[in-house]
Image: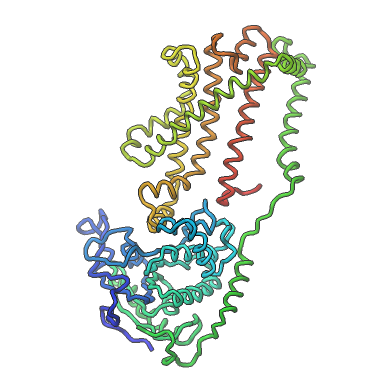
Length: 265
Length: 304
Protein backbone atom coordinates (compact mmCIF):
# COMPACT_ATOMS: atom_id res chain seq x y z
CA UNK A 1 0.00 0.00 0.00
CA UNK A 2 2.51 2.58 1.12
CA UNK A 3 6.16 2.14 0.60
CA UNK A 4 8.99 4.19 1.98
CA UNK A 5 11.32 5.35 -0.70
CA UNK A 6 14.98 6.09 -0.73
CA UNK A 7 16.18 9.65 -0.25
CA UNK A 8 15.84 10.62 -3.90
CA UNK A 9 12.81 10.14 -6.06
CA UNK A 10 12.92 7.31 -8.54
CA UNK A 11 12.99 8.50 -12.09
CA UNK A 12 10.35 6.35 -13.66
CA UNK A 13 9.76 8.56 -16.68
CA UNK A 14 12.19 9.66 -19.31
CA UNK A 15 10.61 13.11 -19.71
CA UNK A 16 12.25 16.04 -17.92
CA UNK A 17 10.78 16.62 -14.47
CA UNK A 18 8.28 19.42 -14.01
CA UNK A 19 10.44 20.69 -11.19
CA UNK A 20 13.93 19.68 -10.18
CA UNK A 21 15.32 20.83 -6.85
CA UNK A 22 18.97 19.88 -6.40
CA UNK A 23 20.95 20.29 -3.19
CA UNK A 24 19.11 23.47 -2.38
CA UNK A 25 19.91 25.35 0.82
CA UNK A 26 18.50 28.63 1.99
CA UNK A 27 19.59 30.81 4.87
CA UNK A 28 18.40 34.20 6.04
CA UNK A 29 20.33 36.87 7.93
CA UNK A 30 19.74 36.46 11.67
CA UNK A 31 21.81 38.54 14.11
CA UNK A 32 21.55 36.08 17.01
CA UNK A 33 22.40 32.90 15.10
CA UNK A 34 25.91 31.46 14.77
CA UNK A 35 27.58 32.96 11.72
CA UNK A 36 24.89 35.63 11.62
CA UNK A 37 22.62 33.48 9.42
CA UNK A 38 19.77 31.10 10.14
CA UNK A 39 19.74 27.99 7.98
CA UNK A 40 16.13 27.33 6.91
CA UNK A 41 16.53 24.70 4.19
CA UNK A 42 19.42 22.27 4.17
CA UNK A 43 20.44 20.33 1.07
CA UNK A 44 16.99 19.57 -0.32
CA UNK A 45 16.83 17.37 -3.39
CA UNK A 46 13.41 16.73 -4.85
CA UNK A 47 11.93 16.06 -8.28
CA UNK A 48 8.33 16.44 -9.35
CA UNK A 49 7.61 14.24 -12.37
CA UNK A 50 5.30 15.46 -15.13
CA UNK A 51 1.73 14.90 -14.05
CA UNK A 52 2.74 13.98 -10.51
CA UNK A 53 0.95 15.20 -7.38
CA UNK A 54 3.40 15.73 -4.53
CA UNK A 55 2.59 17.10 -1.09
CA UNK A 56 5.22 18.72 1.09
CA UNK A 57 4.42 18.08 4.71
CA UNK A 58 6.04 19.49 7.81
CA UNK A 59 5.58 21.18 11.15
CA UNK A 60 5.95 24.94 11.44
CA UNK A 61 9.48 26.16 10.86
CA UNK A 62 10.33 23.45 8.34
CA UNK A 63 10.64 25.99 5.55
CA UNK A 64 8.02 24.46 3.29
CA UNK A 65 6.68 27.83 2.21
CA UNK A 66 10.24 29.05 1.70
CA UNK A 67 10.90 26.09 -0.55
CA UNK A 68 7.74 26.82 -2.53
CA UNK A 69 8.77 30.47 -2.95
CA UNK A 70 12.13 29.29 -4.29
CA UNK A 71 10.48 26.97 -6.81
CA UNK A 72 8.12 29.79 -7.78
CA UNK A 73 11.11 32.02 -8.47
CA UNK A 74 10.03 34.64 -5.94
CA UNK A 75 13.31 34.14 -4.06
CA UNK A 76 16.78 32.73 -4.81
CA UNK A 77 18.40 29.75 -3.08
CA UNK A 78 21.61 30.32 -1.11
CA UNK A 79 23.06 27.16 -2.65
CA UNK A 80 21.98 24.51 -5.13
CA UNK A 81 19.88 24.79 -8.27
CA UNK A 82 16.20 24.80 -9.10
CA UNK A 83 14.88 24.03 -12.53
CA UNK A 84 11.30 24.37 -13.72
CA UNK A 85 9.71 24.11 -17.11
CA UNK A 86 8.59 27.72 -17.56
CA UNK A 87 7.19 29.93 -14.80
CA UNK A 88 5.12 27.89 -12.36
CA UNK A 89 1.64 28.94 -11.31
CA UNK A 90 1.23 29.69 -7.61
CA UNK A 91 -1.77 29.61 -5.31
CA UNK A 92 -1.68 31.10 -1.84
CA UNK A 93 -3.47 30.42 1.43
CA UNK A 94 -5.35 33.69 0.88
CA UNK A 95 -7.11 33.86 -2.46
CA UNK A 96 -5.02 36.88 -3.54
CA UNK A 97 -7.66 37.84 -6.11
CA UNK A 98 -7.55 41.51 -7.07
CA UNK A 99 -10.59 43.22 -5.53
CA UNK A 100 -10.75 45.92 -8.20
CA UNK A 101 -11.54 43.31 -10.85
CA UNK A 102 -14.42 40.89 -11.25
CA UNK A 103 -13.78 37.16 -10.96
CA UNK A 104 -13.71 36.85 -14.75
CA UNK A 105 -11.42 39.86 -15.19
CA UNK A 106 -8.98 38.43 -12.66
CA UNK A 107 -8.61 35.41 -14.90
CA UNK A 108 -8.46 37.56 -18.02
CA UNK A 109 -5.63 39.61 -16.48
CA UNK A 110 -3.58 36.43 -16.05
CA UNK A 111 -4.30 35.58 -19.70
CA UNK A 112 -3.40 39.09 -20.84
CA UNK A 113 -0.09 39.02 -18.96
CA UNK A 114 0.60 35.69 -20.66
CA UNK A 115 0.06 37.35 -24.03
CA UNK A 116 -3.33 35.90 -24.97
CA UNK A 117 -5.15 38.07 -27.50
CA UNK A 118 -8.24 40.03 -26.48
CA UNK A 119 -10.83 38.01 -28.47
CA UNK A 120 -9.75 34.69 -26.94
CA UNK A 121 -9.45 35.97 -23.38
CA UNK A 122 -13.13 36.16 -22.60
CA UNK A 123 -13.76 32.69 -24.02
CA UNK A 124 -10.82 31.14 -22.19
CA UNK A 125 -11.90 32.77 -18.91
CA UNK A 126 -15.40 31.32 -19.36
CA UNK A 127 -13.91 27.89 -20.02
CA UNK A 128 -11.74 28.04 -16.89
CA UNK A 129 -14.65 29.22 -14.76
CA UNK A 130 -16.68 26.32 -16.05
CA UNK A 131 -13.81 23.98 -15.15
CA UNK A 132 -14.05 25.11 -11.51
CA UNK A 133 -17.84 25.03 -11.80
CA UNK A 134 -18.40 28.76 -11.46
CA UNK A 135 -19.98 29.36 -14.83
CA UNK A 136 -22.06 32.31 -13.65
CA UNK A 137 -19.36 34.06 -11.62
CA UNK A 138 -17.67 35.99 -14.45
CA UNK A 139 -19.19 39.35 -13.55
CA UNK A 140 -19.12 38.85 -9.78
CA UNK A 141 -16.96 40.99 -7.56
CA UNK A 142 -14.53 39.18 -5.29
CA UNK A 143 -16.32 40.24 -2.11
CA UNK A 144 -19.57 38.79 -3.42
CA UNK A 145 -18.06 35.29 -3.47
CA UNK A 146 -17.76 32.85 -0.57
CA UNK A 147 -14.37 31.65 0.66
CA UNK A 148 -14.62 28.42 -1.30
CA UNK A 149 -15.69 30.20 -4.48
CA UNK A 150 -12.79 32.64 -4.14
CA UNK A 151 -10.30 29.80 -3.91
CA UNK A 152 -11.84 28.18 -6.97
CA UNK A 153 -11.52 31.45 -8.92
CA UNK A 154 -7.93 31.66 -7.66
CA UNK A 155 -7.39 28.11 -8.95
CA UNK A 156 -8.88 29.09 -12.31
CA UNK A 157 -6.58 32.13 -12.41
CA UNK A 158 -3.57 29.92 -11.63
CA UNK A 159 -4.63 27.54 -14.41
CA UNK A 160 -4.90 30.53 -16.77
CA UNK A 161 -1.12 30.83 -16.61
CA UNK A 162 -1.02 27.62 -18.61
CA UNK A 163 1.95 26.40 -16.61
CA UNK A 164 2.74 22.70 -16.43
CA UNK A 165 3.47 23.03 -12.72
CA UNK A 166 1.03 24.27 -10.10
CA UNK A 167 2.43 25.26 -6.71
CA UNK A 168 -0.05 25.44 -3.85
CA UNK A 169 0.80 26.99 -0.48
CA UNK A 170 -1.77 25.62 2.00
CA UNK A 171 -4.54 26.84 -0.29
CA UNK A 172 -7.40 25.38 1.74
CA UNK A 173 -6.11 26.02 5.27
CA UNK A 174 -8.44 28.96 5.88
CA UNK A 175 -11.60 27.22 4.72
CA UNK A 176 -14.20 25.45 6.83
CA UNK A 177 -14.02 21.65 6.91
CA UNK A 178 -16.94 20.94 4.57
CA UNK A 179 -15.78 23.40 1.93
CA UNK A 180 -12.24 22.09 2.20
CA UNK A 181 -13.48 18.55 1.70
CA UNK A 182 -15.36 19.55 -1.46
CA UNK A 183 -12.36 21.45 -2.80
CA UNK A 184 -10.13 18.40 -2.25
CA UNK A 185 -12.44 16.46 -4.49
CA UNK A 186 -12.51 19.31 -7.00
CA UNK A 187 -8.74 19.67 -7.08
CA UNK A 188 -8.30 15.92 -7.61
CA UNK A 189 -10.76 15.99 -10.50
CA UNK A 190 -9.09 18.99 -12.15
CA UNK A 191 -5.62 17.52 -11.65
CA UNK A 192 -6.70 14.32 -13.38
CA UNK A 193 -8.42 16.21 -16.20
CA UNK A 194 -5.52 18.55 -16.91
CA UNK A 195 -2.54 16.27 -16.25
CA UNK A 196 -0.80 19.06 -14.31
CA UNK A 197 2.10 18.51 -11.96
CA UNK A 198 1.22 19.74 -8.49
CA UNK A 199 3.48 20.59 -5.56
CA UNK A 200 1.16 21.12 -2.60
CA UNK A 201 2.37 22.42 0.76
CA UNK A 202 0.38 21.58 3.88
CA UNK A 203 0.70 20.85 7.58
CA UNK A 204 -2.40 18.67 7.48
CA UNK A 205 -1.37 14.99 7.28
CA UNK A 206 -4.74 13.68 6.16
CA UNK A 207 -5.00 16.31 3.47
CA UNK A 208 -1.54 15.32 2.25
CA UNK A 209 -2.43 11.63 2.10
CA UNK A 210 -5.80 12.17 0.53
CA UNK A 211 -4.50 14.27 -2.35
CA UNK A 212 -1.01 13.09 -3.17
CA UNK A 213 0.73 10.36 -5.08
CA UNK A 214 3.79 11.08 -3.01
CA UNK A 215 4.11 12.65 0.43
CA UNK A 216 7.42 14.30 1.32
CA UNK A 217 8.00 14.90 5.02
CA UNK A 218 10.34 17.75 5.89
CA UNK A 219 12.12 17.98 9.22
CA UNK A 220 12.21 21.33 10.98
CA UNK A 221 15.01 23.81 11.60
CA UNK A 222 16.64 23.34 9.25
CA UNK A 223 14.26 21.81 6.74
CA UNK A 224 15.54 18.54 5.31
CA UNK A 225 13.75 15.75 3.47
CA UNK A 226 13.10 13.39 6.36
CA UNK A 227 11.16 10.67 4.61
CA UNK A 228 8.94 10.07 1.60
CA UNK A 229 5.95 7.83 1.00
CA UNK A 230 4.32 6.90 -2.27
CA UNK A 231 0.59 6.78 -1.77
CA UNK A 232 -0.59 3.93 -3.92
CA UNK A 233 -4.31 4.30 -3.20
CA UNK A 234 -6.82 4.79 -6.00
CA UNK A 235 -8.46 8.20 -6.49
CA UNK A 236 -10.96 9.45 -5.63
CA UNK A 237 -10.14 9.02 -1.97
CA UNK A 238 -11.97 10.34 1.03
CA UNK A 239 -10.67 11.67 4.30
CA UNK A 240 -12.61 8.93 6.11
CA UNK A 241 -11.10 6.02 4.13
CA UNK A 242 -9.49 3.46 6.40
CA UNK A 243 -6.43 3.25 4.18
CA UNK A 244 -6.01 7.04 4.27
CA UNK A 245 -6.37 6.97 8.05
CA UNK A 246 -3.84 4.17 8.40
CA UNK A 247 -1.13 5.88 6.37
CA UNK A 248 -1.91 9.21 8.03
CA UNK A 249 -1.36 7.60 11.42
CA UNK A 250 2.01 6.28 10.30
CA UNK A 251 3.08 9.66 8.91
CA UNK A 252 1.78 11.50 11.97
CA UNK A 253 3.88 9.24 14.20
CA UNK A 254 6.95 10.11 12.14
CA UNK A 255 6.07 13.82 12.22
CA UNK A 256 5.67 13.74 15.99
CA UNK A 257 9.06 12.10 16.27
CA UNK A 258 10.55 14.95 14.23
CA UNK A 259 8.90 17.55 16.43
CA UNK A 260 9.94 15.77 19.64
CA UNK A 261 13.61 15.91 18.67
CA UNK A 262 13.44 19.69 18.99
CA UNK A 263 12.39 19.51 22.62
CA UNK A 264 15.39 17.43 23.61
CA UNK A 265 18.07 20.07 23.31
CA UNK B 1 4.24 6.63 -10.85
CA UNK B 2 1.03 5.31 -9.47
CA UNK B 3 -1.77 4.78 -11.91
CA UNK B 4 -4.93 6.42 -10.75
CA UNK B 5 -7.07 3.69 -12.22
CA UNK B 6 -5.39 0.95 -10.20
CA UNK B 7 -7.63 -0.53 -7.57
CA UNK B 8 -5.26 -3.14 -6.16
CA UNK B 9 -4.03 -2.42 -2.70
CA UNK B 10 -7.28 -1.12 -1.33
CA UNK B 11 -8.30 -2.93 1.81
CA UNK B 12 -11.55 -2.68 3.65
CA UNK B 13 -13.15 0.46 2.30
CA UNK B 14 -14.14 1.06 -1.23
CA UNK B 15 -13.79 4.58 -2.44
CA UNK B 16 -16.97 6.60 -2.28
CA UNK B 17 -18.87 6.61 -5.57
CA UNK B 18 -17.72 9.61 -7.56
CA UNK B 19 -20.83 11.02 -9.07
CA UNK B 20 -19.73 14.24 -10.70
CA UNK B 21 -23.25 15.64 -10.57
CA UNK B 22 -23.33 14.98 -6.87
CA UNK B 23 -20.19 17.03 -6.29
CA UNK B 24 -21.52 19.78 -8.51
CA UNK B 25 -24.79 19.80 -6.55
CA UNK B 26 -22.93 19.88 -3.24
CA UNK B 27 -20.84 22.77 -4.46
CA UNK B 28 -23.82 24.69 -5.77
CA UNK B 29 -25.45 24.29 -2.35
CA UNK B 30 -22.37 25.53 -0.51
CA UNK B 31 -22.03 28.49 -2.88
CA UNK B 32 -25.66 29.46 -2.37
CA UNK B 33 -25.31 29.23 1.42
CA UNK B 34 -22.03 31.11 1.68
CA UNK B 35 -22.21 33.82 -0.94
CA UNK B 36 -22.82 37.34 0.31
CA UNK B 37 -26.26 38.71 -0.39
CA UNK B 38 -26.36 42.18 -1.86
CA UNK B 39 -29.58 44.11 -1.54
CA UNK B 40 -30.18 47.61 -2.91
CA UNK B 41 -31.87 50.02 -0.55
CA UNK B 42 -35.14 51.49 -1.88
CA UNK B 43 -35.28 55.20 -2.75
CA UNK B 44 -37.60 56.04 0.13
CA UNK B 45 -35.06 54.69 2.65
CA UNK B 46 -32.30 56.69 1.00
CA UNK B 47 -34.34 59.90 1.23
CA UNK B 48 -35.28 59.19 4.82
CA UNK B 49 -31.76 58.30 5.97
CA UNK B 50 -29.52 60.43 3.77
CA UNK B 51 -31.50 63.55 2.84
CA UNK B 52 -33.76 64.25 5.81
CA UNK B 53 -31.02 64.64 8.51
CA UNK B 54 -28.96 67.35 6.73
CA UNK B 55 -32.14 69.23 5.70
CA UNK B 56 -33.28 69.19 9.31
CA UNK B 57 -29.89 70.46 10.47
CA UNK B 58 -29.93 73.36 7.98
CA UNK B 59 -33.49 74.28 8.99
CA UNK B 60 -32.46 74.29 12.66
CA UNK B 61 -29.51 76.59 11.97
CA UNK B 62 -31.84 79.02 10.11
CA UNK B 63 -34.32 78.98 13.00
CA UNK B 64 -31.63 79.66 15.60
CA UNK B 65 -30.15 82.40 13.41
CA UNK B 66 -33.55 84.11 13.05
CA UNK B 67 -34.19 83.88 16.79
CA UNK B 68 -30.82 85.51 17.49
CA UNK B 69 -31.73 88.33 15.07
CA UNK B 70 -35.12 88.83 16.75
CA UNK B 71 -33.49 88.84 20.16
CA UNK B 72 -31.15 91.55 18.86
CA UNK B 73 -28.05 89.96 20.43
CA UNK B 74 -25.96 92.13 18.07
CA UNK B 75 -26.64 95.28 16.05
CA UNK B 76 -27.83 94.68 12.46
CA UNK B 77 -24.53 95.83 10.91
CA UNK B 78 -22.85 92.94 12.74
CA UNK B 79 -25.51 90.30 12.42
CA UNK B 80 -27.40 90.28 9.15
CA UNK B 81 -30.78 88.56 9.15
CA UNK B 82 -31.53 85.56 6.93
CA UNK B 83 -33.94 87.68 4.89
CA UNK B 84 -31.26 90.35 4.27
CA UNK B 85 -28.86 87.68 3.01
CA UNK B 86 -31.61 86.21 0.85
CA UNK B 87 -32.25 89.71 -0.55
CA UNK B 88 -28.56 89.94 -1.42
CA UNK B 89 -28.77 86.59 -3.23
CA UNK B 90 -31.81 87.77 -5.19
CA UNK B 91 -30.19 91.08 -6.10
CA UNK B 92 -27.03 89.38 -7.35
CA UNK B 93 -29.15 86.88 -9.29
CA UNK B 94 -31.27 89.63 -10.88
CA UNK B 95 -28.16 91.61 -11.83
CA UNK B 96 -26.79 88.45 -13.40
CA UNK B 97 -23.58 88.65 -11.38
CA UNK B 98 -24.23 85.70 -9.06
CA UNK B 99 -23.21 83.01 -11.54
CA UNK B 100 -20.26 85.16 -12.66
CA UNK B 101 -18.88 85.27 -9.11
CA UNK B 102 -19.25 81.52 -8.79
CA UNK B 103 -17.88 80.68 -12.22
CA UNK B 104 -14.82 82.95 -11.84
CA UNK B 105 -13.77 81.07 -8.73
CA UNK B 106 -14.90 77.56 -9.73
CA UNK B 107 -13.16 77.67 -13.12
CA UNK B 108 -9.96 78.86 -11.45
CA UNK B 109 -10.26 76.23 -8.73
CA UNK B 110 -10.95 73.30 -11.07
CA UNK B 111 -8.27 74.28 -13.57
CA UNK B 112 -5.77 74.66 -10.73
CA UNK B 113 -6.85 71.31 -9.34
CA UNK B 114 -6.36 69.59 -12.71
CA UNK B 115 -2.86 71.09 -12.93
CA UNK B 116 -2.17 69.82 -9.43
CA UNK B 117 -3.40 66.36 -10.49
CA UNK B 118 -1.08 66.28 -13.49
CA UNK B 119 1.91 67.26 -11.34
CA UNK B 120 1.02 65.44 -8.12
CA UNK B 121 0.40 62.00 -9.64
CA UNK B 122 3.82 61.32 -11.18
CA UNK B 123 5.42 63.00 -8.18
CA UNK B 124 3.58 60.60 -5.84
CA UNK B 125 4.59 57.60 -7.94
CA UNK B 126 8.24 58.71 -7.83
CA UNK B 127 8.23 59.27 -4.07
CA UNK B 128 6.53 55.92 -3.43
CA UNK B 129 8.68 53.81 -5.73
CA UNK B 130 12.15 55.42 -5.70
CA UNK B 131 13.65 55.23 -2.23
CA UNK B 132 16.17 58.02 -2.90
CA UNK B 133 13.41 60.41 -3.90
CA UNK B 134 11.36 59.36 -0.90
CA UNK B 135 14.23 59.99 1.50
CA UNK B 136 14.96 63.30 -0.20
CA UNK B 137 11.54 64.95 -0.45
CA UNK B 138 9.07 62.65 1.33
CA UNK B 139 9.22 64.47 4.71
CA UNK B 140 9.07 67.89 3.01
CA UNK B 141 6.01 66.82 1.05
CA UNK B 142 4.22 65.73 4.24
CA UNK B 143 5.34 68.88 6.03
CA UNK B 144 4.00 71.12 3.28
CA UNK B 145 0.51 69.82 4.05
CA UNK B 146 0.58 71.48 7.45
CA UNK B 147 1.76 74.82 6.03
CA UNK B 148 -1.29 77.09 5.59
CA UNK B 149 -1.46 77.95 1.91
CA UNK B 150 -2.22 81.59 2.73
CA UNK B 151 1.48 81.83 3.56
CA UNK B 152 2.27 81.36 -0.13
CA UNK B 153 0.20 84.36 -1.24
CA UNK B 154 2.73 87.16 -0.47
CA UNK B 155 5.69 85.45 -2.21
CA UNK B 156 3.46 84.42 -5.14
CA UNK B 157 2.36 88.03 -5.61
CA UNK B 158 5.98 89.22 -5.56
CA UNK B 159 7.15 86.51 -7.98
CA UNK B 160 4.26 86.46 -10.42
CA UNK B 161 2.33 89.70 -9.91
CA UNK B 162 -1.39 90.13 -9.49
CA UNK B 163 -2.72 87.75 -12.10
CA UNK B 164 -4.19 84.26 -12.60
CA UNK B 165 -0.74 82.55 -12.63
CA UNK B 166 -0.26 83.71 -9.06
CA UNK B 167 -3.60 82.11 -8.11
CA UNK B 168 -2.63 78.85 -9.80
CA UNK B 169 0.75 78.85 -8.07
CA UNK B 170 -0.95 79.13 -4.68
CA UNK B 171 -3.41 76.35 -5.58
CA UNK B 172 -0.60 74.07 -6.74
CA UNK B 173 1.44 74.61 -3.58
CA UNK B 174 -1.64 73.69 -1.56
CA UNK B 175 -2.98 70.75 -3.58
CA UNK B 176 0.05 68.97 -5.05
CA UNK B 177 1.34 67.71 -1.67
CA UNK B 178 -2.12 66.32 -0.80
CA UNK B 179 -2.49 64.46 -4.07
CA UNK B 180 1.06 63.12 -4.02
CA UNK B 181 0.80 62.08 -0.37
CA UNK B 182 -2.52 60.34 -1.01
CA UNK B 183 -0.95 58.28 -3.76
CA UNK B 184 2.08 57.47 -1.60
CA UNK B 185 -0.20 56.31 1.24
CA UNK B 186 -2.28 54.28 -1.21
CA UNK B 187 0.81 52.53 -2.57
CA UNK B 188 2.26 51.93 0.90
CA UNK B 189 -0.96 50.25 1.98
CA UNK B 190 -1.07 47.72 -0.87
CA UNK B 191 -1.05 44.24 0.72
CA UNK B 192 2.28 42.57 -0.18
CA UNK B 193 0.26 39.53 -1.24
CA UNK B 194 -1.11 41.43 -4.27
CA UNK B 195 2.42 42.30 -5.34
CA UNK B 196 3.54 38.67 -4.98
CA UNK B 197 0.48 37.43 -6.85
CA UNK B 198 1.15 40.01 -9.56
CA UNK B 199 4.75 38.86 -9.89
CA UNK B 200 3.76 35.20 -10.26
CA UNK B 201 1.34 36.27 -13.00
CA UNK B 202 4.17 38.08 -14.75
CA UNK B 203 3.29 41.66 -13.87
CA UNK B 204 6.72 43.18 -13.20
CA UNK B 205 8.18 46.61 -13.87
CA UNK B 206 5.91 48.98 -15.78
CA UNK B 207 3.25 46.30 -16.28
CA UNK B 208 3.25 45.77 -12.54
CA UNK B 209 2.73 49.51 -12.00
CA UNK B 210 -0.10 49.64 -14.52
CA UNK B 211 -2.02 46.47 -13.71
CA UNK B 212 -1.28 45.97 -10.00
CA UNK B 213 0.19 49.01 -8.21
CA UNK B 214 -2.02 51.80 -9.61
CA UNK B 215 -5.38 50.01 -9.31
CA UNK B 216 -4.45 48.64 -5.87
CA UNK B 217 -3.53 52.15 -4.68
CA UNK B 218 -6.72 53.71 -6.06
CA UNK B 219 -8.63 54.09 -2.73
CA UNK B 220 -5.77 56.05 -1.15
CA UNK B 221 -5.32 58.03 -4.34
CA UNK B 222 -9.00 59.04 -4.48
CA UNK B 223 -8.86 60.08 -0.81
CA UNK B 224 -5.85 62.22 -1.74
CA UNK B 225 -7.78 63.78 -4.64
CA UNK B 226 -10.65 64.64 -2.33
CA UNK B 227 -8.33 66.32 0.12
CA UNK B 228 -6.48 67.92 -2.80
CA UNK B 229 -9.71 69.58 -3.94
CA UNK B 230 -10.42 70.89 -0.44
CA UNK B 231 -6.90 72.36 -0.32
CA UNK B 232 -7.26 73.83 -3.83
CA UNK B 233 -10.45 75.59 -2.88
CA UNK B 234 -9.12 76.91 0.41
CA UNK B 235 -5.88 78.13 -1.19
CA UNK B 236 -7.79 79.86 -3.93
CA UNK B 237 -10.06 81.67 -1.45
CA UNK B 238 -7.04 82.84 0.54
CA UNK B 239 -5.45 84.14 -2.65
CA UNK B 240 -8.62 85.89 -3.80
CA UNK B 241 -9.23 87.57 -0.46
CA UNK B 242 -5.71 88.93 -0.12
CA UNK B 243 -4.84 89.75 -3.72
CA UNK B 244 -7.44 91.94 -5.32
CA UNK B 245 -7.00 93.77 -8.57
CA UNK B 246 -9.52 95.02 -11.10
CA UNK B 247 -7.87 92.84 -13.76
CA UNK B 248 -8.65 89.66 -11.84
CA UNK B 249 -12.46 89.81 -12.05
CA UNK B 250 -14.66 89.29 -9.00
CA UNK B 251 -14.51 85.79 -7.58
CA UNK B 252 -16.05 84.66 -4.31
CA UNK B 253 -12.99 85.66 -2.30
CA UNK B 254 -13.09 89.17 -3.71
CA UNK B 255 -16.82 89.35 -3.10
CA UNK B 256 -16.11 88.68 0.57
CA UNK B 257 -13.36 91.31 0.68
CA UNK B 258 -15.59 93.85 -1.13
CA UNK B 259 -18.34 93.16 1.41
CA UNK B 260 -15.93 94.00 4.23
CA UNK B 261 -14.79 97.18 2.50
CA UNK B 262 -18.41 98.25 1.97
CA UNK B 263 -19.31 97.25 5.54
CA UNK B 264 -22.10 95.17 4.01
CA UNK B 265 -22.68 92.23 6.34
CA UNK B 266 -25.29 90.61 4.05
CA UNK B 267 -22.71 90.54 1.25
CA UNK B 268 -20.08 89.02 3.57
CA UNK B 269 -22.56 86.35 4.65
CA UNK B 270 -23.51 85.72 1.05
CA UNK B 271 -19.87 85.23 0.05
CA UNK B 272 -19.15 82.86 2.93
CA UNK B 273 -22.31 80.91 2.16
CA UNK B 274 -21.41 80.59 -1.52
CA UNK B 275 -17.83 79.52 -0.75
CA UNK B 276 -19.17 76.84 1.57
CA UNK B 277 -21.87 75.69 -0.86
CA UNK B 278 -19.48 75.40 -3.82
CA UNK B 279 -16.97 73.40 -1.78
CA UNK B 280 -19.69 71.03 -0.63
CA UNK B 281 -21.31 70.80 -4.07
CA UNK B 282 -18.09 69.88 -5.88
CA UNK B 283 -17.36 67.25 -3.23
CA UNK B 284 -20.90 65.84 -3.41
CA UNK B 285 -21.06 65.87 -7.21
CA UNK B 286 -17.58 64.65 -8.10
CA UNK B 287 -15.44 63.27 -5.32
CA UNK B 288 -17.85 61.48 -3.01
CA UNK B 289 -19.49 59.48 -5.85
CA UNK B 290 -16.02 58.61 -7.19
CA UNK B 291 -14.86 57.46 -3.78
CA UNK B 292 -18.04 55.46 -3.12
CA UNK B 293 -17.77 53.78 -6.50
CA UNK B 294 -14.18 52.71 -5.88
CA UNK B 295 -14.93 51.44 -2.38
CA UNK B 296 -18.17 49.70 -3.27
CA UNK B 297 -16.54 47.84 -6.16
CA UNK B 298 -14.07 46.40 -3.69
CA UNK B 299 -16.58 45.57 -1.00
CA UNK B 300 -15.00 48.14 1.32
CA UNK B 301 -18.15 50.20 1.80
CA UNK B 302 -20.22 49.17 4.78
CA UNK B 303 -23.70 50.59 4.49
CA UNK B 304 -24.77 52.12 7.76
